[in-house]
Length: 142
Image 1 (cartoon, rainbow, N blue to C red):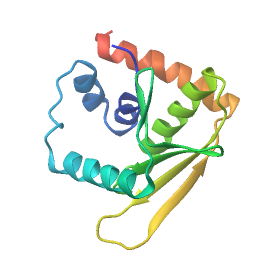
Image 2: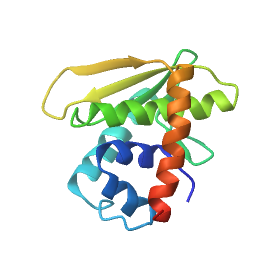
Image 3: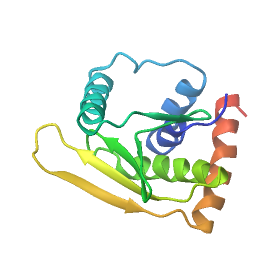
């Protein structure tokens, strides 16, 4: 399986979940949280007239001239979400597209949203290369 942003997120959130998803043992596709996240994403796309962009095996929420924006429904695991966004920035960079990352957290019971800006550095890119190898090893059971 090719590494994608979801696997990077799961790698930081829960290695077991990363393994299960990587081996297509998805127990989450019909969960309430996934349904809420998809509804928030669709509502946001409708309001802003932006559609999800697919590049290789990643899906980007929003790409502007300055930012790649990833929207999350909660701040439950910000660290995992940041690494997912950084992974997307790495993929874009490999295509010659350089952007900053913007993580938008839209809490379902709050009026405000949180915004976190991230930048892909050479050091982070090297770490992501190592993480990709670790994910592949994890999924393959090595």
